[in-house]
View 1 (cartoon, chains in turn cyan, brown):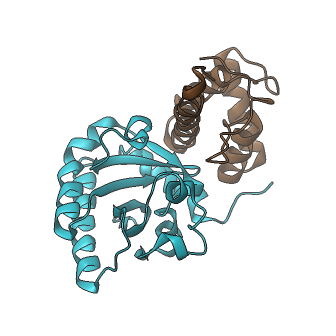
View 2 (cartoon, chains in turn cyan, brown):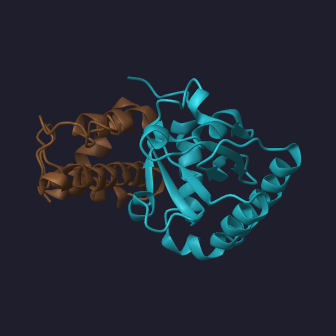
Length: 168
Length: 104
């Protein structure tokens, strides 16, 4: 096996995640209100600030997942991750209806946990690495406007500023 | 919890099994290349008191991943992936087993 060319497995990206302290639990307090504002602004039940690792998604901060197994575990396998797409494309990823999405209609988060719609934007560090996503998740089919995605981008930029301020 | 990985089965509804030593070694190879990845795993196994190729329980994989995390940097992120995948398995397996009153 050779080194993967998939951005998910980029050692420099993973090093950036570590150097920014995103494995530390103390990142949650500085990001949780960003997640809450994202959910509120789009009227969504769930929002996550995710860190996409090589083989798992880690929840760095969240809104609306109390009582769910995702909150207990603090993440899930990367192959179930909607957020991983943005690490690869460096752009927003929107799924209005998971039931008809070719990649995610068989995703256990859809078939077992009821995820029905998703919109996420990448968290890109000032060094250019995609760290993860700011996303909203719903249990009903929903479309997302450009303005709503723009609002998520603004909040994602704020999240990155807060993360990087800890490095200084 | 000490569950054997081999033959331990997958959680049917999620089509998901516990991370194995082979999967962790493959993960390390994807990120760092085969040689550096194998060296890192061997070092983690030694630190955890395990033998490479004989890490067969969830507890052993967890201990070795914890030792890998101590290396810091990108190695710690790979270790965190293993940790999240293991905790996912344990949590979902417990739920799947609940109706029968058993554990994993």
